[in-house]
Image (cartoon, rainbow, N blue to C red; front, side, top):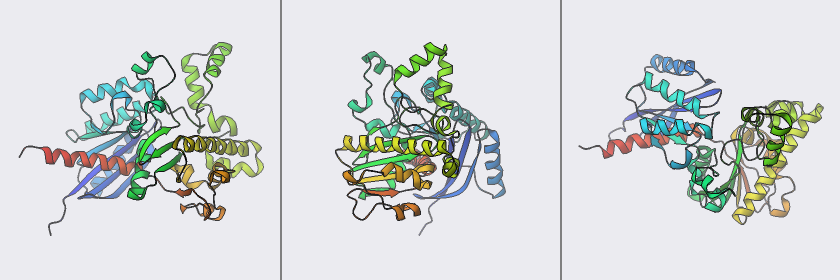
Length: 371
């Protein structure tokens, strides 16, 4: 039997201050991660990876996939990055000013190092384009909606991975909690997003490491008037100075958990975070008309049993019962045998989804090319 041709695909996840790189080897449809690198958001990350590839005698990737946090109003699927798309991404920077400039810089860096290698944009917002208008629309005058001011939702690549891991056995009504320095939850019906906590930008939803999450709009008006704050001042507060950092003194959940026994502020921050998650679980469960499965994922969701415990506290009346012993082990099913709703911890892998999309584009391009 002829062996499937090997192809390498590079997945790039460029954040506001960090860059994650992962190289995948594809043999047919089977993918294997052969290299990972996490570091500062600069050219050194790419230099390190390419030096490693050369040292190992690996070939240049057949394609490069990028996590693009915000696709704006026009992108519902992965897309080839050409000049037109680059212009659209530049126009979308106001939607995600913390993330899109870094992604654009990574695209340009790859163009210089690997000219001619196709680059594919994988949008975090694409998973949520299935939301109905009643969930997507803000209660603002229609002309703002026509300008693209609407609920987009984020962490879509993570949610897509979890749905793919659940496979054909996915229950009808699922709530997934992606909990990390950025955090959101999504309601999934029959594998499709129907509502989510984040909105126009990744600042909305539940409180996060340094972000406020949802606020009464009057709070921002009050702060601006009383303190003579500019728009940039407000953005700095809601994106960089708030959330767990403001409540507990640090944005690092691991540090908060370590400090909690002797630090009331740390305990309160953890409790407040878990409470926000619990409220969101309830709201999304009611949006679904019930819940068959609750999934925790992301750095905090996968590694902080205390957060999962608080998030599920007092939900017994709704058939959501956590098993404390299973929860401490933190993998697989962590619900009590008597729970009507299953609770699971599933590690996410956004890089894998990015690589799959980029590989699929290359395969489609080869099959559609004239012979």
